[in-house]
Image (tube, rainbow, N blue to C red; front, side, top):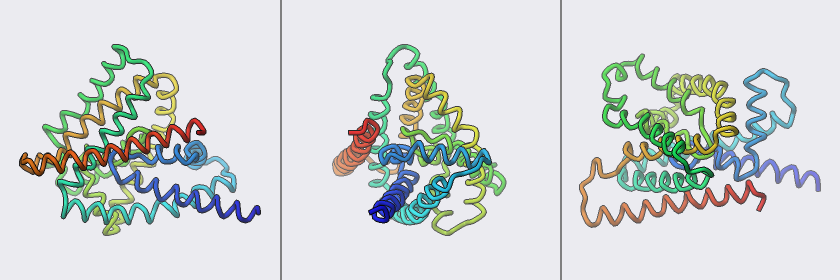
Length: 281
């Protein structure tokens, strides 16, 4: 019986890792949300805290991280191939779904904001203002970042900022905002080791700093933090708006509405399941 439970636990953690990998690739669904949904968010954070703080790790911590990696790595490679394929052949459709995923996540964020006062509105506008200027002056349009050293700086910065991932916002949103999303998908697909190592270095550096900051902000300023994140996410829609490269026709608008609805439904469903998992229902 114990052996059966152990193998069942192993399968659950690997599957959780697989879906967390999907959350790392698709905008609007974050790996922390899936980790919370499956009840392993806190053990992951505790294990990673020990790892980056060079503390002694228990055997259970090592097993947990190993099993997660077993699920996450193949998921990221598989999803990178699929997303790139769809972006090449069906860009309008995939970005329409992404818009829906983000809208659904914004709804989930709104539910997390317990207080809805002037302070929350200010922080929402700050989140909007921080990112929106990049829409008018994207990093990708600055000539310096077309050079090798510039691209490496963006790779490191993408990892650094993405490491602040919260249950309400995914790593991929950050990559889209920084204009590095497709480049990193290609790096995964082509196994560009240098690019992946630089991104990972940025991610680990940022994680070491952000994990404690984010925890404090959520504990003491929860509503303001989620309001700020909501502003960031609404800004991100401008970067993937599918009609930037497509004309407004009756068919395209109907297709956009259908696919956006599908994306929003998926995201809201994840939010509902996440809340049930958190409340033990």
